[in-house]
Length: 151
Image (cartoon, rainbow, N blue to C red; front, side, top):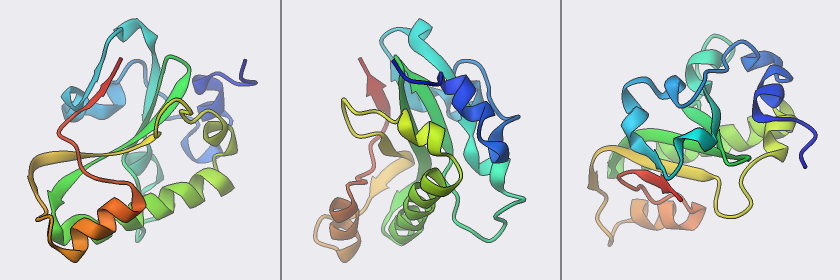
């Protein structure tokens, strides 16, 4: 059993301590980008980008985190076109560094049953398979998906 619940881990993270939201409400208009089998297993969400924008105004910040069935996931809702691959990779690097340095309790809770990191496309997928950008996304393990579906 983890030492912290997701809510406790968020509250133990000074930069986002006041940003915990119930269910997937932190996702706002992107709530439909995550689908789960049992809504009762969602243990809260945080809009990391909004909560940290004043601390890191010039950084490429990751969008969201949420807990489902005692595992934490990280979701970036972003355009899925060739011109945005580099930006999403920078956001991913920022997130991993932030988790290690600023959010260690949340980091301990990240999903182990499957990858915890997801790039969910905000619109259509437009990254041709024969491009360097496609290969970059594959290399870091962040291929955009239309929706995150968790069983």
